[in-house]
Length: 177
Image (cartoon, rainbow, N blue to C red; front, side):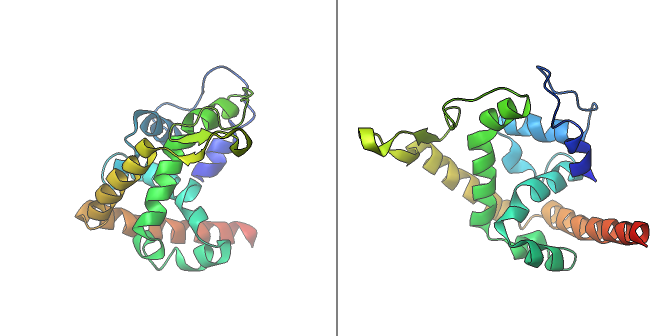
């Protein structure tokens, strides 16, 4: 449901985003820009947490495994802390470039707007890969997510997600029949 809301804006070439006020995608973009997405398990809306899982984290698993397990196994049991951290760090790293592309801007060279990775060409002697700041950020996020996964709020959100996906799948099957 949230993803279909987002798709309405994918071909919008205006200079700014035009999402409904207080929509989960507004919260998502704001958190990514402010670097507060790492707290999405425990703060902000459950819908923003859901959006984060559906856009970023579910891609760490095979489609069939995700589809078959997500309604009965908490997200924190389906993915590792490192999976979750990599999804969060990748979002932070690429946010400016992805948002520019989303607005219809051309980004050249590709990867030039990343936060923690370099785009060097190994042929000219420059190195590609994660910067020291990116590696340090990974460790910071890792420690935070590892603790957050065990909080009451995080566990509550994971239970809510399983119920929400069960409800959505039930609604979808009713519409198919």
